[in-house]
Amino acid sequence: MKKLRWLLGNIFILWLTSWSAYAQQGDLSSWAATVQNDFRVISNITYHQANGMELKIDVYQPRNQTDPAPTFIYYHGGGWVAGSKEVNVLRLIPYLEKGWAAVNVQYRLGDVSLAPAAVEDSLCALRWIARNADQYGFDTDRLVVSGNSAGGHLALTTGMIPSKAELDRQCLGNETPKVAAIVNWYGITDVNDLLDGENQRSYAVRWLGSQPNRNEIADRVSPINYVQEDLPPIISIHGDADPVVPYNHAVRLHQKLTQAEVTNELVTVPNGLHGGFPAQEQIRIYNSIFSFLDSNVD
Image (cartoon, rainbow, N blue to C red):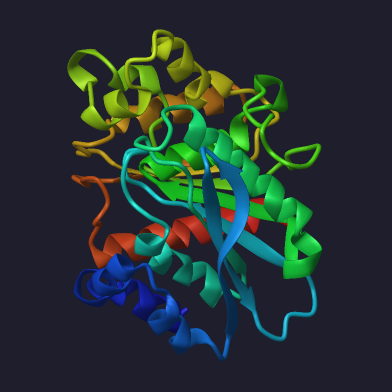
């Protein structure tokens, strides 16, 4: 725990001072070299092809692993129109420190394909993980999906959307596995809420574009519309002063999940903005996350 606290206290300093240079180059080698004795890193594996684009994931596998490992699956933020998996690699550290495997996912951004492409890709990544579990030592009974901002939305849709929604039709394989838990960092839960009115956000407008059925698509990819009693446990983290994704998105989801008797928790960061929380808040958050996972993921 002391080592985890040290990592969390310094993770965002590292983020600001050193990782940006690596991320701009799209090169994980410098960071991977520091953990090569503990983890096997397999970068840029193609998991899906769409719009003439090969979509990639990075796998972090504990060395000397004998049994299938709980697996952390991460979707980056950026309003579905920006960002990259490389920029978010440090967010894997707390789970790697616990001996988990991790998968960092790329998906189509809005300039490649409008909504619902990112949701489709995220589901395809989950199927790829299930199909390749034996090769990489993933425990398919302990798959935890997570993400920040738009990535939080994708983690929610990946874990909540049923097959009958038919958003996984382009994926290889026959069945999308059920995840064990969802860790949602200030994710969008109601996409339509961001398209018009006082909560309109430019990134959401860009992601939906001028599609004539954009409101229908927005409803189709909104986690708030998929609340039902058999969902996996969900923990959400959100600052109550977030200017990018309204805090009310987390509150409404929490209320609906509770009404449906879905195991869930909302961790509110007082005066918290859109991430970038202080180190002590990060420690509190991760203590809550791992307590939640320890209680709900066998």
